[in-house]
Length: 364
Ligand code: GDP
Image 1 (tube, protein in one colour):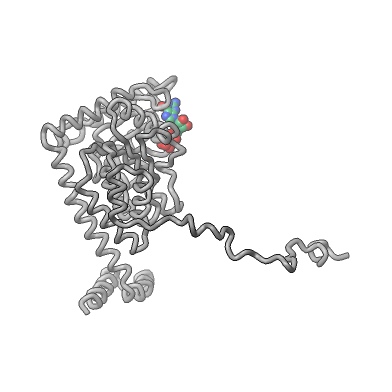
Image 2: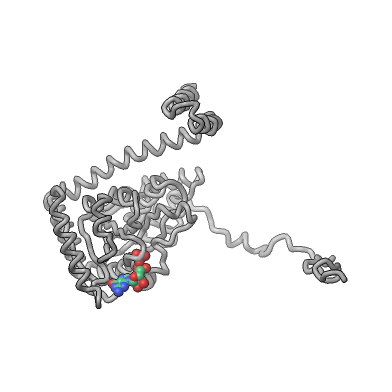
């Protein structure tokens, strides 16, 4: 007896003669293909506040194709003068700290109280591994996502942290040119991404939780030096007392840090994103800071320092790419790496050899 799977009469996948696949699933599709936009179309659309065009420009910024990058750079260049007065807030916290819940509530609060338009962007270093990011995902910020004054954009997913951060910075410029005067940049509080976000915002807000040991971790990772405000979330119900205790611990820990360059003393507050408690206090603090640093000149100073930092970052990124994309280097890299692993070369000699070759090729 033949098993059904091996019997011809039971074969599951049979292509019947006479059925031919059409050349195209939808021959009318070509008609609906998006028209290519010129640099001018992009800039005009963005300056008018056209969200569809802004989204397309951001996609262009995020693209890794050289022809897209070239247009994107021109669009950014022309948008720069239209980049209006804005405040940029970095928001960080470990997964589960309540970033999405809080940003949803914070966003609605600032839009209602201060008016204007809000863009929520994100930098997620893990997105490189997971090939796609959930940070900044619209579905996590349900109320804000349907607000006409809000624009939410997930983290760009391709490339190194430096590359992802650059794309977010460029997106900030586009959003500001489109009239978004409040920018939130969200990041996961797990590593280097904070430094990248710190280099592009005016105020850095750290969301912490009570009783998770995060208090001490935060101190270790240098988060305290970067924070302009530490806010303890989930200060509600049974957790209220613990949140207050954590706040007290943070406050006393802050005494051990040198005064910040801005002259501002970082504040520690408790709130509940979920129940909407203490939200006003958080934003009074943020706006209090903005007034303070605008008055003492630090606001402008910090933005200028950030531009300088960006210049060096761009140079570094460009040099790194030029080196690693060099075909001569590419051909040697694996071999040199192997020699180092086998102990035949020191790492210094291998690096030097590669660099000498690289400089030889670019001199030619
Ligand atoms: P994210 O990973 O940092 O974006 O955190 P989420 O905003 O997704 O929140 C993680 C979990 O904490 C969710 O189950 C939220 O409902 C809960 N949560 C967020 N904010 C609060 C709060 O203020 N109080 C309480 N009790 N739970 C909260």
